[in-house]
Length: 169
Image 1 (cartoon, helix red, strand yellow):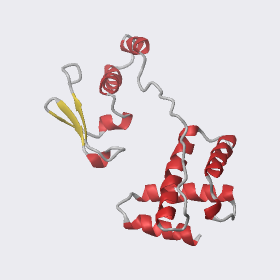
Image 2 (cartoon, rainbow, N blue to C red):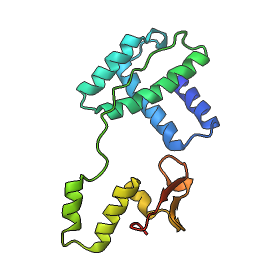
Image 3 (cartoon, rainbow, N blue to C red):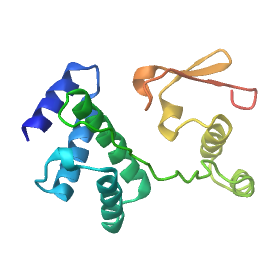
Image 4 (cartoon, rainbow, N blue to C red):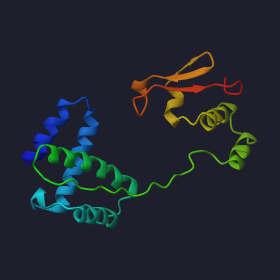
């Protein structure tokens, strides 16, 4: 518990969002429940793989497990740099299954030919053609031929810009 508290203090000295630190601690606490009170020095690559299997068996999806693994990897890297442990561990993530992040053309044609309001048709078309995240379509400003979203409004905290063709204006 002292190590976790020290890690949290360390993370708070960095320019990291509070939600990220909270997620760090959540992943560590989850691992701690799995690993019980065994010494951290005894954690091995096999232990990490067993943890992954345990989380899968508990019904967690691979994407969520990967998030936990990234936070745990950062924690164990800090443990290594702080000389609390003496070996680097491997955190093999599950392969991501890329999902189609758009409306299939046939469905889009059906929507465009339907009786729903033109406003909603235009919103769906905007998302389809720009590829922006759903909430981003309502957070930016139009600047000439560009739709711009400031970094503080985006998920990744990076400015985003989308070119607006004549159809999207």
